[in-house]
Length: 92
Image 1 (cartoon, rainbow, N blue to C red):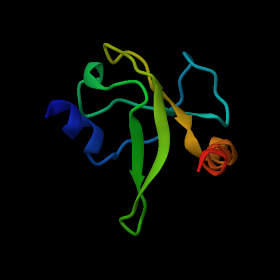
Image 2 (cartoon, one colour; image 1 turned 180 degrees about the vertical axis):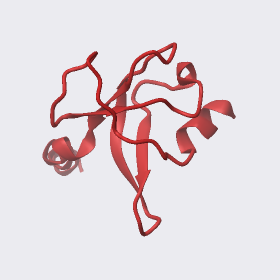
Image 3 (cartoon, helix red, strand yellow; image 1 turned 90 degrees about the vertical axis):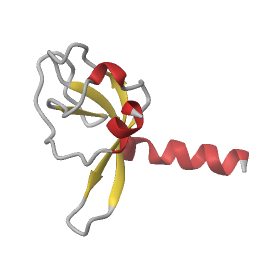
């Protein structure tokens, strides 16, 4: 489907600068996608492929721009790993 293809496509963009969102260690801002952003759900993943060809989860979509006039804003997952692990331990 169009949505699945959008979420699983190879991410080749760079983290961009944007004046429309606060810049901080908890967020990633991305420049234009090779897809129609209006079809991406909030909470969708941002995977980045490293030099070894391995895919890692870097962010979760918090704010998408539709139409694509501004950068998308992703929550940086690595900043919340302590919280995530704590929830897993508590409820496992």
